[in-house]
Amino acid sequence: MNTKPGKVSTRSIGSFLLGIALFANCASSQTAKSAVRISLDDAVQMAIQHNHVLLAARNTVQQSEAEEVTANLRPNPALTVDWEYLPFFTPSSFTADYLHDSSEADFGLSYLFERGHKRQRRLQAAKDITAVTRSQVADNERQLTFQVATLFFNAQLAESTLSLAQQDLKSFQQTVDIGEREFKTGGISENDYLKIQLQLLQYQSDLEQAQAAREQSLSDLRQLLGYESVSADYDVEASFDYQPMKLGLEELQLKALQDRPDLRAAQQGVTAAGSQFALAKADGKQDVTGAFTYSHVNSINTGTVLVSVPLAFFNRNQGEIARTKLAITQAQELQFAANGQVLTDVKDAYEGFRSDDRVVLLYLSRYLAVAQKSRDISEYSYHRGATALLDFLDSERTYRSVQLAYRQSLAAYLLGLEQVREAVGTRTLP
Image (cartoon, rainbow, N blue to C red; front, side, top):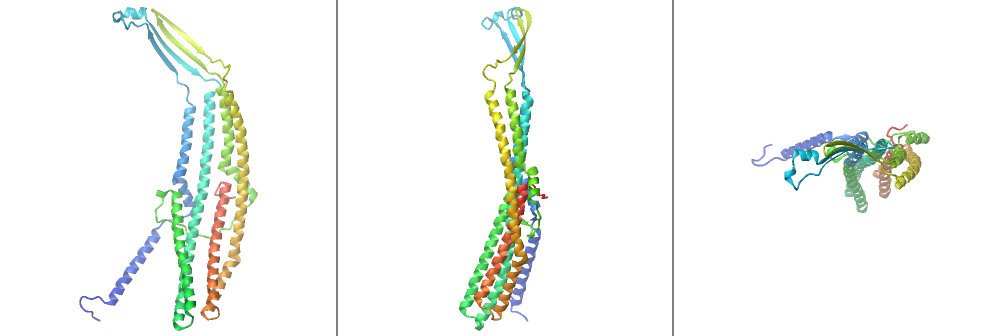
């Protein structure tokens, strides 16, 4: 069929729009394929390598190692030089004979000899502090790993909730379409049709909230991973499934006592306190200053040996010795507290994990299937006039709430498993 000049046929417009739609769909598919998806292990490694707060904490270890260098330094020798009886006010007397016969020149070298192995004690104390700092940074990594896991599972929950909202909206849209046809043919009343439309609003709101939750969770996770280390269009791994784990409490507690870095830091704190006590006692030892001075006096060359030792009548560093000795007891009490906290953390995490596990199994073994079957029966019956509209809408709401509750329980279970890992201090569980 020919068209008039200057006009475009309806078929041409349809083909053009179809082409645009196909191109947009291909572009969207290509973008989805190019988006980076990361697993939980990938996220943890990225955070450990790029998280700026953790990198700042690691810098404290390097600072502590630099303090070890300072602690191991020896005292500097001192050089003294003087030339006395120079005739500045009678310049004519500045002769070689006068300088040789009538002036006095002294060149001295002195050195402080530390007693009580002070340098060795300082170095050991600095090394022990570095060990504590290193364990504290490792504990920062442990806490960061749990924070990453929390946000990762939040993102997975948001993804799953978004997928559920899309499915529910699509499914209920079909119900709305059927209701519209029935209303137009007189199969249902206008009031019933309006109730169906109002129910659609809930599904649309759920979809919007799920999309916002997804974007926010991915944004928060990106901050922990190191904002610059991951592209803006990244996504988390899609798998969001139940992972059965059989864990024993006693074995977990034993491994926690071996692996928890905060407990190790508390134990090293006792050692560091002992090193400070030993250093305080060493500082109570009086150092000796030795000096040798060469003198030229009235054409005579002489040498002087000087030894200086403070008399420790009053200050023998008694206060610092007493303080550091008490600090050992303090560090021991903190170690006992950390030991008990570790066992408590493992116990609490283990019991929470077991409870979450039982709840998820309830859904998997029974209630997901029950909700699905109830919804299918109600939908089948409603479309054939055997079930009232309110009963059908109620079954839809029940199905949605059960599915959403299951996903939340699954996220709580996975997070509970990660909390056990955090309490134990390792992601490799026995």
